[in-house]
Length: 437
Image (spheres, one colour):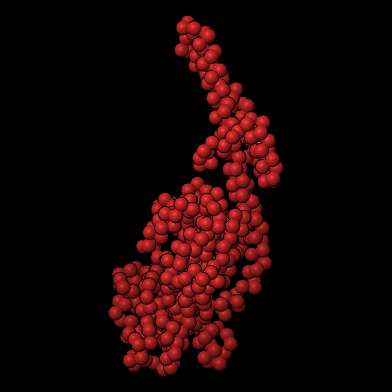
């Protein structure tokens, strides 16, 4: 068995590639079933966010398994494998474990230390369990990743004041508004007419940060007005007008700053929609949805500025340096957690050999007990038979205790392999067909 992760992220692929591979919740079960339908994929779990798509797997054969995952990604995205390959990364065994722990801790995020990724990893665990695509190996690894992410945020200051994608989007707006005024600094948004499209988690964070950055009011648009109103009620200090998505054209005509964060799989805004509108002289659109909510051709319209998640790097770079020292502290914790998992994983290698030894000793025990009982004759009571059975089983368990404990204890893999081989030779432990399963 072989652990591997195949994926792409903001570090390896632009948003136009990432959006082709995004897997929404409603198709997650189907995607996991497709992966598991290949006999090379023993276990699978998928992490799909605006900045990454990663598939964690337990494979029979590394080469054939990775090829199967690549074929799945090609079918899902509609891109040829040759088009995808330059954007994909693949990590095996120790590197796959280390990568997952870094992701859960927020060390691989666009925004160093962001908190939202941990909840997304938790969601990956839940979906894998619900759809029965993870088994004992991935289940242990994924749950350890969650506990590691919690530990890093509890024992370091990495999560203190950490910016999210949403707060970076608000800061990007502040920076671009300032640059339009000839200032290379963040400015207040109090003069902007602001709209937010969508009422999910990212939109909630947008409202939180807009209120903190001086915004005087927001128009919140959503397909379901009731959902928008429930969200708005959580921000009593920020005036929020809740409107249906049908009012989007009106907002595009009257607002100067519009954020979009919806789960739509196709753009809800394109140049053809904006061109006929009687708009203000300037309009800034910031799209943090993946797939993108705003088509690329909008940026060519006069007076329109369009930004997406890949444009957040400019703001992120301004906030990262102060967090790098804390990140180094967290890396030490990740190395410790990775070692604990790998020691557990390595210990599993001894299980088939120990099972064969137990079966061999159990066969000998049963044969010798039956010989002894047959010599005792009919006068031997049922109670006495039970005592003999218990005695013989106790002897077997005592014999097995030391090799079992030593073989599964943390140790260099080479030493464990030597001990396993010696045991196989000494007791003639020939592997049975299908014994490894």
